[in-house]
Amino acid sequence: MNPAIEVKNLGKTYGSVTAIDDLSLTINPGEIFGLLGPNGAGKSTTLRILITVLKPTTGTATVLGHDVVEEPDTVRSLIGYVPQERAIDRFLTGREHLQLLGDLYHLPKAQATQRIQELLKLVDLEEHADRTAKTYSGGMKRKLDIACGLLPNPKIVFLDEPTLGLDVHSRLRIWDHIRQLRKQGITIVMTTNYLEEADQLCDRLAIIDQGKIKVIGTPKELKAGLGGDSLSLTVKESQLDKLDRLSEGVKTLSFVRNIRTIDNGLNIRVESLEKSLPAVLEVANRIECQVDGIEYHRPRLDDVFVSFTGHALKGEYPDPVEE
Amino acid sequence: MNFPHYKQEVLALTLRWIRRLSREKFSMLFTLIQPMLFWLIFFGSLFQRTADIEVLQAPNYMSFLAGGVVVMTVLNNGLAGGVDLLFDKENGFLERMMSTPIHRTSIILSRYLFVMTITGMQILVILGIAFLFGVHPVTGLLGIAVILVIGMLFGIGLTAISLAMAFSVKSHGDFFSMLGFLSLPMIFLSSALVPLSAMPGWMQALAFLNPMTWVIDAVRPLIITGWEAAIPQVAIALVILAIFDAICLYGGAKAFEKAIG
Image (cartoon, helix red, strand yellow):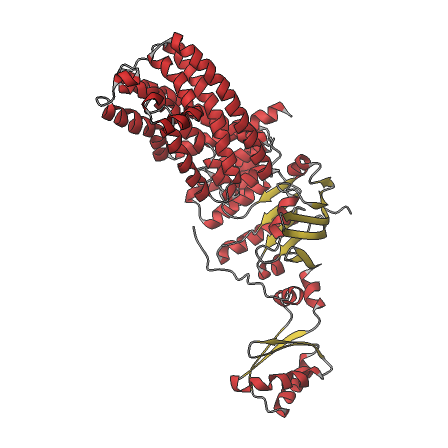
């Protein structure tokens, strides 16, 4: 099976600033592939090179076998692009946006009219198609964005932060749309800085940080790869001086994989909770360290992120903003 | 280049600019009316009696000013010509257009078609208003056609400056600061409001170097003096505009290339 996208040793520098560095990855046809990372990690730069609006400094990238630098027009005619929110002309109606894009993709008039009607129905904007976009809510703008990206009937759709700033309800609708597209056999490449989104939506993902790919895999593989569950212990402030001894004691236990100091306590990665929990508490008792709280969870994608990048991703969903 | 495709792109993009303008009714009215209201009617009427017609070498101040206002309109429209693309660049619309299989120049060409059409219409309206105030262009319809051509040629270079600025500035705040910084001095340091002979020496020297002066000095005799005086001035203006446009288009193309690749 030929890959949908093949990226080899891709690099982009702006003067002395390195946006991405020696990036290589392969995206398979029909999958939802996520680029996960904080703002400024290089996700958008990568995406913009793939959609041919930015030229790489080093390396190559092919989309459906066509080089993005050598054959940009071929690539452009095969892909759809959904930029970050607000790439909308507020003075045009929804239908006029799609008509404009129909002409930019050189669709014949009759074909464009039919396609536009289908898309308006698909994203549920039929009723609002002839109102100017300034009357649209954030969710409606996003849906129009997606319709624009689908207009050329693309084989691959690129989405840049598809749910940034959307409320919960709109976010779930957009996820549904994206899953629908995959069902039709369309390959999806998206960037996100939301862990939950990457976990729920993506078939495979690449964690990008400071311009480099840290790891690539399915969310399940990545979580399993961490090996073991996470056990967090916190102690009272008066007990903080015993933390080092606690750590020393826990380290000797055979089913402990890794220990990390957190605020007022320890985060311990363990193989088996049943065995480790009593043993860890026994160590605490022995050194008379009073435990304040215990938290336990299965590995989550944020643990994966921390373990590969050394820092947490603060991609919390913000309060919903309705425009 | 596939010509039917190119035509389809350029027409669709031009239609978008027209739609945008027509949806901003207030802004449209203001843009169209401001130059004639502020400069021609207010400024012209204010100085009608204080201006010395010996110095002006014109029947009255309004007729002297008409040519200046025509060229000022070209200046303002040209320098503002890149604004919409600046907003497109900032909100990602430009990137969306660039990710489609269009010829890179069709966006620029559509912008030119739009700015030139609006400017041409405005020139005609200004000359119409001036007509109502008793300024009758002595060279007639042919003279007006020549004024339009000179205006367009000046507009080409100015729009290129504006587009170059739009593609290279970091924020639209910078763009509007630069615009403000450019536009008024260009007007005051030209023959738009007073003839060069009435200026202090240092201003005269600067105005002499301002291409706008040469453009106005070609337009003005077409309105108030006649062909004989106008033809040599028009010839000089055409040469200057050819050089001016060549420089601006080259700079604009460089900025575009750098921004878009």
